Image 1: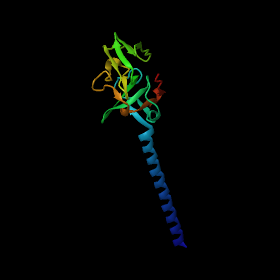
Image 2: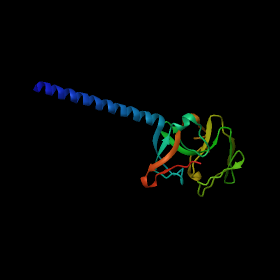
Image 3: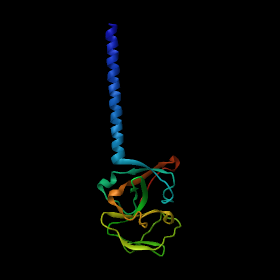
Image 4: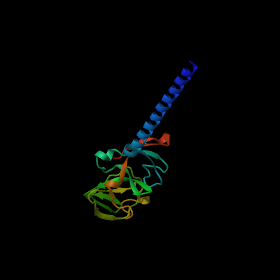
Length: 182
């Protein structure tokens, strides 16, 4: 009888250990799926998106949105700059648009762009350039301190390099907010 009780306890422990292992493996698989295809946490490094984003803020990037839609003007996106580094910038123009900076004003297709999210800034003349097919033109909100599409090292951003759209700032918690990209 004691042996049966010990066998029952042993079977119960083995069954419970298997259930725990299965749950842990499933949780890991779900976390990997979410990280690869749906959402990613991104750390803002630098001041190129000031005043919209602050250095060391953490935000959530929606990776799924661009599976179904193309980046739109005004979106704040994260894209792969190099294999080791991602950038975060604002979409200013999409394929076929003509971008020009003249007399400290930004023009898209000949019309001045209203940018209420900007503070004092100065921009050197640029363009006009036409955005090629499959690419977007991005700028940082801190125009005087941003490595963006005006820089040949960045240039036009191909659709394949776009990782996702920034949607929520969650850290620091007292400054958390939903990003209004338009």
